[in-house]
Amino acid sequence: MISEFRSFIAKGNVMDLAIGIIIGGAFTGIVNSLVNDVVMPIVGAITGGGFDFSNYFLPLSSAVTAPNLAAAREQGAVFAYGSFITVLINFLILAWIIFLMVKGVNRLRVIEEKKPAEAAPAPPPADVQLLTEIRDILKTK
Image (cartoon, rainbow, N blue to C red; front, side, top):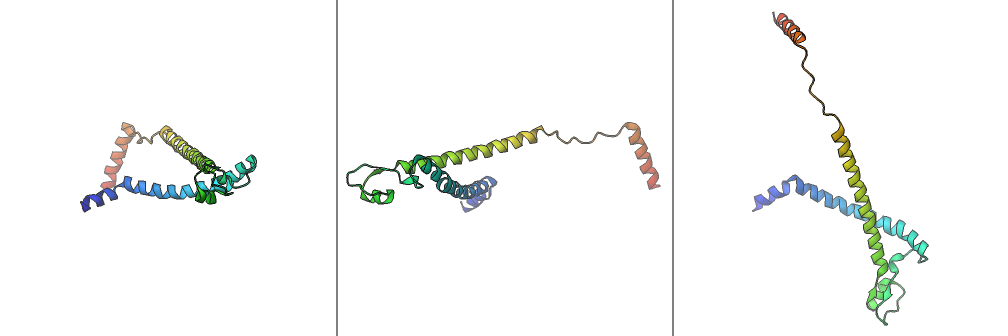
Protein backbone atom coordinates (compact mmCIF):
# COMPACT_ATOMS: atom_id res chain seq x y z
CA MET A 1 0.00 0.00 0.00
CA ILE A 2 2.86 2.38 0.75
CA SER A 3 4.40 1.83 -2.68
CA GLU A 4 1.03 2.48 -4.31
CA PHE A 5 0.73 5.68 -2.30
CA ARG A 6 4.22 6.80 -3.38
CA SER A 7 3.30 6.04 -6.98
CA PHE A 8 0.09 8.04 -6.63
CA ILE A 9 1.88 11.02 -5.08
CA ALA A 10 4.64 10.95 -7.68
CA LYS A 11 2.18 11.30 -10.56
CA GLY A 12 2.31 14.66 -12.27
CA ASN A 13 -1.37 15.43 -11.79
CA VAL A 14 -1.16 15.17 -8.01
CA MET A 15 1.87 17.43 -7.89
CA ASP A 16 0.16 19.92 -10.23
CA LEU A 17 -2.88 19.89 -7.98
CA ALA A 18 -0.77 20.48 -4.87
CA ILE A 19 1.02 23.40 -6.52
CA GLY A 20 -2.32 24.80 -7.66
CA ILE A 21 -3.69 24.65 -4.13
CA ILE A 22 -0.64 26.41 -2.71
CA ILE A 23 -0.77 29.13 -5.35
CA GLY A 24 -4.54 29.38 -4.88
CA GLY A 25 -4.06 29.97 -1.16
CA ALA A 26 -1.59 32.76 -1.84
CA PHE A 27 -3.86 34.17 -4.54
CA THR A 28 -6.78 34.14 -2.11
CA GLY A 29 -4.73 36.30 0.24
CA ILE A 30 -4.14 38.80 -2.56
CA VAL A 31 -7.82 38.89 -3.49
CA ASN A 32 -8.85 39.24 0.18
CA SER A 33 -6.52 42.21 0.52
CA LEU A 34 -7.88 43.72 -2.70
CA VAL A 35 -11.45 43.38 -1.45
CA ASN A 36 -10.85 44.43 2.16
CA ASP A 37 -8.28 47.18 1.57
CA VAL A 38 -9.30 48.62 -1.81
CA VAL A 39 -12.82 47.71 -2.94
CA MET A 40 -14.76 47.65 0.33
CA PRO A 41 -13.53 51.06 1.55
CA ILE A 42 -14.70 52.57 -1.75
CA VAL A 43 -18.06 50.76 -1.52
CA GLY A 44 -18.35 51.82 2.13
CA ALA A 45 -17.62 55.45 1.23
CA ILE A 46 -20.20 55.39 -1.56
CA THR A 47 -22.88 53.84 0.65
CA GLY A 48 -22.05 56.17 3.54
CA GLY A 49 -21.02 53.39 5.86
CA GLY A 50 -17.47 54.53 6.35
CA PHE A 51 -14.60 52.22 5.62
CA ASP A 52 -15.69 49.11 7.53
CA PHE A 53 -18.42 47.58 5.41
CA SER A 54 -18.12 44.21 7.16
CA ASN A 55 -19.64 45.69 10.34
CA TYR A 56 -23.10 46.00 8.77
CA PHE A 57 -25.49 43.75 10.65
CA LEU A 58 -29.02 43.49 11.95
CA PRO A 59 -29.55 42.28 15.51
CA LEU A 60 -31.89 39.28 15.73
CA SER A 61 -32.32 39.65 19.46
CA SER A 62 -33.22 42.60 21.65
CA ALA A 63 -30.18 41.78 23.80
CA VAL A 64 -27.81 42.83 21.00
CA THR A 65 -26.86 46.48 21.48
CA ALA A 66 -23.19 46.50 20.45
CA PRO A 67 -22.03 48.92 17.75
CA ASN A 68 -19.66 46.50 16.00
CA LEU A 69 -20.12 42.98 14.68
CA ALA A 70 -17.62 41.18 16.93
CA ALA A 71 -19.18 42.52 20.10
CA ALA A 72 -22.70 41.98 18.75
CA ARG A 73 -21.98 38.31 18.07
CA GLU A 74 -20.95 37.91 21.70
CA GLN A 75 -24.27 39.38 22.83
CA GLY A 76 -26.50 37.23 20.64
CA ALA A 77 -27.65 36.31 17.17
CA VAL A 78 -27.04 38.78 14.38
CA PHE A 79 -27.71 38.86 10.64
CA ALA A 80 -24.25 39.87 9.38
CA TYR A 81 -25.16 40.94 5.86
CA GLY A 82 -22.07 43.16 5.56
CA SER A 83 -19.76 40.18 6.00
CA PHE A 84 -21.79 38.26 3.44
CA ILE A 85 -21.57 41.10 0.93
CA THR A 86 -17.80 41.30 1.51
CA VAL A 87 -17.40 37.56 0.87
CA LEU A 88 -19.69 37.78 -2.17
CA ILE A 89 -17.65 40.62 -3.67
CA ASN A 90 -14.50 38.65 -2.87
CA PHE A 91 -15.91 35.65 -4.75
CA LEU A 92 -16.98 37.73 -7.74
CA ILE A 93 -13.53 39.31 -8.04
CA LEU A 94 -11.84 35.93 -7.74
CA ALA A 95 -14.20 34.37 -10.30
CA TRP A 96 -13.61 37.29 -12.69
CA ILE A 97 -9.83 36.98 -12.40
CA ILE A 98 -9.98 33.21 -12.97
CA PHE A 99 -12.25 33.79 -15.97
CA LEU A 100 -9.72 36.24 -17.42
CA MET A 101 -6.88 33.80 -16.80
CA VAL A 102 -8.72 30.92 -18.51
CA LYS A 103 -9.67 33.21 -21.38
CA GLY A 104 -6.02 34.24 -21.79
CA VAL A 105 -4.80 30.64 -21.73
CA ASN A 106 -7.45 29.65 -24.29
CA ARG A 107 -6.38 32.54 -26.52
CA LEU A 108 -2.76 31.38 -26.32
CA ARG A 109 -3.83 27.85 -27.22
CA VAL A 110 -5.71 29.10 -30.29
CA ILE A 111 -2.65 31.10 -31.36
CA GLU A 112 -0.44 28.05 -30.92
CA GLU A 113 -2.84 25.87 -32.90
CA LYS A 114 -2.97 28.38 -35.76
CA LYS A 115 0.80 28.44 -36.14
CA PRO A 116 1.77 26.33 -39.13
CA ALA A 117 3.50 23.19 -38.09
CA GLU A 118 7.11 23.17 -39.06
CA ALA A 119 7.17 20.78 -41.94
CA ALA A 120 10.21 18.68 -42.69
CA PRO A 121 12.20 20.22 -45.50
CA ALA A 122 11.26 18.86 -48.89
CA PRO A 123 13.80 16.43 -50.30
CA PRO A 124 16.02 17.91 -52.99
CA PRO A 125 15.19 17.15 -56.60
CA ALA A 126 16.49 13.88 -58.01
CA ASP A 127 19.28 15.49 -60.04
CA VAL A 128 20.62 17.43 -57.03
CA GLN A 129 20.43 14.28 -54.91
CA LEU A 130 22.38 12.35 -57.59
CA LEU A 131 25.05 15.04 -57.78
CA THR A 132 25.35 15.02 -53.98
CA GLU A 133 25.86 11.25 -53.99
CA ILE A 134 28.52 11.55 -56.69
CA ARG A 135 30.29 14.26 -54.68
CA ASP A 136 30.26 12.12 -51.55
CA ILE A 137 31.66 9.12 -53.43
CA LEU A 138 34.46 11.24 -54.91
CA LYS A 139 35.35 12.61 -51.43
CA THR A 140 35.88 9.11 -50.05
CA LYS A 141 38.31 8.08 -52.83
